[in-house]
Length: 352
Image 1 (cartoon, helix red, strand yellow):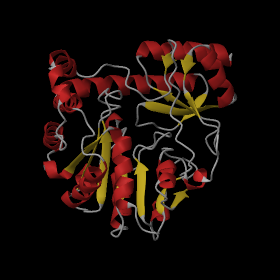
Image 2 (cartoon, one colour):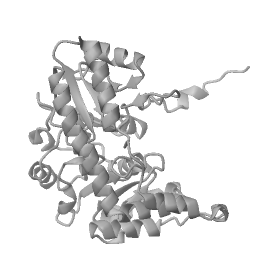
Image 3 (cartoon, one colour):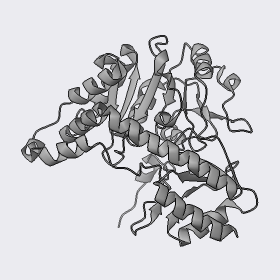
Image 4 (cartoon, one colour):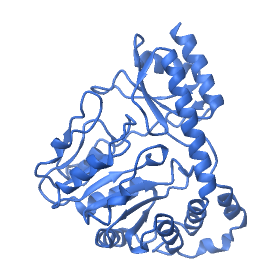
């Protein structure tokens, strides 16, 4: 086989590493999926959908979904952008708004896709250290920058930042776009959506993957000023206009309309989370005050790496990172009460 120098022109990056997706039957508490099914209204759409429509291109504007999201949050449809999961939405936002030679700012302990996107798109970035208790220091974000992004609640720590702190950062950066990634906001944190009419440079991103039990259907969305959303759509339509299937659009619209089911499902997860905190404390764990659908915990005497491996042998999967500052922590997704009780029984045996 002939060889050449073509590899010199390849864009080489270290890819994002998603949570393990085991093929065998396990208790899966490692990827923050919702343990309950989507709204029954989604199942009705799936049962009744006319598959003949699959031969047609989808509505590139995703009107039925955009309109439903806009109505739910009392904003204009022109203030809503939708994408194939919040990862797709954030990726488009990076491409759209982070184009200066100044570095984009985000925390050192956060969603590990941010530095991957920055690397792929050749965007300079600086990771700002969280405090000792895993909180954002707003002073770190009051400097020259090419944009700011962070989750609230943060991942993998689960910590909530106050709305006043978020507004402080947005207000201090009128020349940058500030993105708040609210993938877990429905589990107890206060959304920054109340600030979007006040600050033209604020973009809030949410997802159907967690609180609406639709990780497999891939629906994410951003809400912001009409100007921000237009810029994002201009980029999206320059890459791929037909990103979301008609079936996905219909299912998403029905899911967001079913407020009662959404509220009840979130409450079940929050109740189980608070119960789980008590059980973990009894077993000698310490953890942040999670406002998400997971708990970020470390044990007082047993290394996280050993607990992780022992749980995996028992077919219970949690998330572990061998990274600075968090190498002795486990991120445990909140499952059903029955799944969590099996976890606690396994931990009791491992720790004895």
